[in-house]
Image (cartoon, rainbow over all chains, first blue to last red; front, top):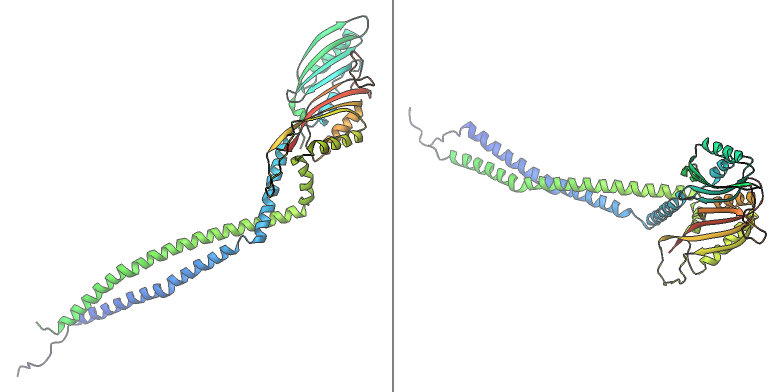
Length: 176
Length: 202
């Protein structure tokens, strides 16, 4: 058998496969890069622009007017609420007060100090017995926290006295 | 060893190395960039959602305020935020009207704590701060009329904060009568001294 000096040696299959694989890898990388560069990134950039445009559309002149209107109302209401919460209500106090007076007792003066929840009263009655009845009546009232009676003057005429009451401050508060 | 095999191997290795380098230096930064863009989109969408919700709420509240007649209510509430050079005169006229309405007789009315001078700057809206002005009334009349006056005060949009009340018997001249017997419950001619405050802008 003659030796064929011109015949080429066959390239091993693994080298061919490696070559094909390397080309495929190269193509895949190029495709990924191209897809990202020319499709995905511009798509995301476009989305950002679109959201920015939407954002810019917010806060139109009309919306800002509405916002100013609401904020001004809120501020005014808060200020008014602060003032209104400090308001004193006398309805409950005077309704209660009428039940604190013993029928034979008359008051010649009454001073109401709302901040201290204190009453100073000058009273008159016919007998000492009536003063005692008045005190018993005051004892029974839960809204009277404490009281001081002083300056009891018994003359030939009516019996006069001074009374100081510390009362429940809630009586001056508004019932919501 | 045959040299024909060399290009295959060399080219394959060169392509693989180039692909790896290409991916590392060019494709990977793209992913980083896309990740940053995703974050930016997410932040912007969140901001857009918040802004949209905020303005929707504002619009809804503005609608509700209109439905509730806020413009009229606001004008009434404004009585509590008054100021200006005619404040005292306006208040005197206002309180006189209320007292007359109650049926009591007004002996005197004092309004204190209002600034005497009032500066107006053109083009500048003076928001001012809220302050309290002292008001005191000296009144004569029936006890029930007095209760009516308190009721009238209570119904006013102007918040009149009463700090103290003094009730005593009164002579027809309006002076207190020492030792005069008066029942608070019975309707009698009495003297009432009311001290309180009203809000004002300073």
